[in-house]
Amino acid sequence: MSQMRGVPDESQGTTHLIAIRLQQSLYTAAGRLLSQVAGAVLLLLADHDRQRLDRHLPVLTASARNLTEHLAATRLPSASQQLLQSVQERLSAIVLWLQQIGAPDMLSDRDIDATLAELQHLRGMLISAGEQSCQFSMITFAAGCCCGSHEARFDARLATS
Amino acid sequence: MSDYSIWLLEYASQPDVPIGDVLYGKIDQPRRRMPYCYVVLQSRDHVVMVDIGYNHTDFGRALAEGYGVDHWNDPVKVLGLCGLHPRDVDSIFITHAHFDHFGNIEAFPNAHFYIAAEEIDRSLWALSLPERLNFMTMAIDPGDLVKAAELARRQRLTLIEQDIVDALPGIDLHIARDTHTFASIWVEVRNDGQNPSEDSWVVAGDLVYSYDNIGGVADGATAGTPYHPIGIAIGSQANLLLTTEAMLKAVDYRRRRVIPVHEEQVMQLFPSRILAPGLSITEICLADGATSRLA
Image (cartoon, rainbow over all chains, first blue to last red):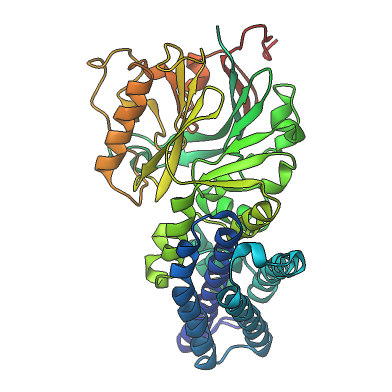
């Protein structure tokens, strides 16, 4: 039975699907780590209970490490690999900074502003990477939202790609 | 004597919502249109909002499209319906951290924000869990957390730890833990300034989607049908029901004084002006001396 031109056979399609799902999963992890780090910075700046932030730091460290290991164990298209590697390293640096600082009133304005600018920048990187590399709004998955209609739309795109 | 005018402003809508989302476990009713609204309170001294909607770009747009939300309108246009501009708003109470309530922070440059500390704290915990547990954080936009951190930097964010009486004069904040989200807030407006008040209103956030959740619109503790909790929650249905009882008690069981922000029927029960799909103003009450914005 001949294959229709331009339509991948079943095994190719499955491989493609797995690769895209893997990529999604990594973007999801990066987006969630970004959310965690931003939330931790928020607590640092707004919460009077420093212990609350301190309780999150080991978890944050573990999340950053998980993303590192996940990335190391996965072969992605090089652009995505580099981008996610960069996001992971830069978020890990902020986590380290959060661990090292003492009382919030010892923070310098310059450090805080640089950290907030970095978070905004990383958010922008994830958004544009999601839109460009995956042809659909990958950031939805990064936000942790795998709701039905997106899944359906995603699968429809795969079917027509 | 009323201190605050209250308007319900619709900024978007979701045309086709399964009934099970609105009423827990319900399957035998047709789908509904769900307006997306925020609430404006205006007194002589303050312009206050309860929630701020979302910004239809980036993550916000992706999430909205995922949920089937359409007809989004910019807050400049929406607040214009009651003669205000987003820069006029001085205080914003965020009921919970979902994108359609906590998004678009940047549109309100002069406001001080309030959200429950526990809502942030436990959301961070949930974000650290494996992806298969995403349901707990699926409506959170990472961008909102980044922007909220910037608010904190400018000392424009207060994390509240417990219920607050007179967060602003006559406005109380109540925390409802483990309900729709980890720590949602409902807002009680004691419009005569008295405590207890005979002129209270409650802005329910997503703790109530519809009058059907609170037993209808009839007055009286024994009137109406039993409470029926909303269908989308990460906490407990028992907590939702007990919170409903607390809200109803605050308004002396006058059900129309609980203001749901996703209920189309509000626009029929109060004077309203519907301008376009996803764009309407409903005048809940007017402060002494204030003029109607529906003319």
